[in-house]
Length: 421
Image (cartoon, rainbow, N blue to C red; front, side, top):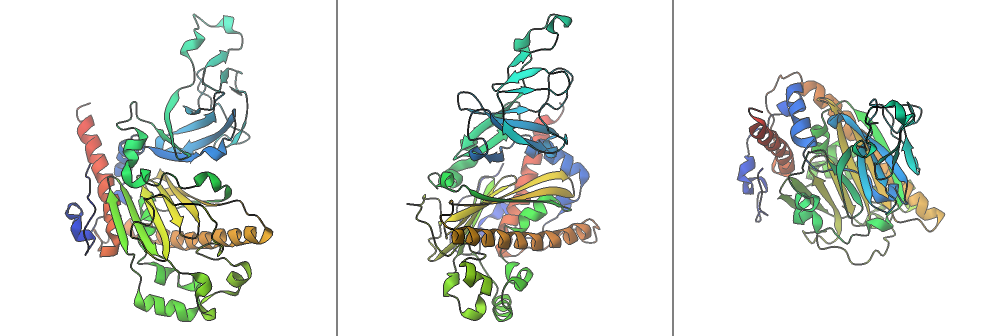
């Protein structure tokens, strides 16, 4: 799979000659056969983030994750000795889903001492060992030590829980992330425990939605109604260009300069933003989070707005200069549908006003996400018409080229390795 150096100044795309500058095909977003290859080549080989350690704060805490793209459900649990482990959510007896509540296809969470199958009451401890079989004497030569839960490779980085479905991962999680991501170590993720979550089923290929957040070329136009008319008109005419893009291994980064919302003219702010002292860019009161890691704000923007780290294949961490962050996940469910998850993280509010400021920021981002999603469903339907074979991209859309190129590289690599198997 290709590796890309940091570019010098100038056109970003031209300094990544492997990506080219010509029109790009979106066949990888409409072809069911490519999607089936993508599931095996990418989602069963790459490290996938499935949550954070705060979701399982003590021993026996667990949550399930439904992963249609990998054709499985998993259990993530904190064991008796404090380790984080993951297992396929399947009983070794007759294949029943082991952990679920009223609806078998819905995700769930909780705390327990052991997992008990609803079908025949087989029991497993937190380390996945089979500990009890109903009427064990009825079975033939049953050795319980051979029938524990099926493990999934699981590693934790900075509190983020990753799994890998390969029989043997080709890289450790840390090697997979690489320096651009590991240079974020030291960010106070553990202090960001005020959490807002939203989820949407989107009728578009997962890559098309990721593309929407890899460039800001669209922002002055698509999101114009989120700003006062005079400001939106001026922004649309002037356009917007991010000052820094970076590609490293399979991952990508785009940085932007910042805006001090409270210093904007009165006609450029919404009344609710003044009342809550918050808005799209987050609460105006920036918390003291200490020294930031070297990986943030590589362009040295002043003021700094945000860094959007796109972790291959489907995970985004977006850091805001105002002292908070959010994550996006894009979970494919078919070649033209996926589940989008957005989670916003702040430090715990100290006052009701701080809580309201956080809620306004979270709601603002939800509205932006809905605007993007609505456009993408329209994109998907017309790309599937195949009226056009390829599409033009500008210099600001270099990360879009990379996502589609990297996905194709993983698929080609998988084909080579499995040829004749």
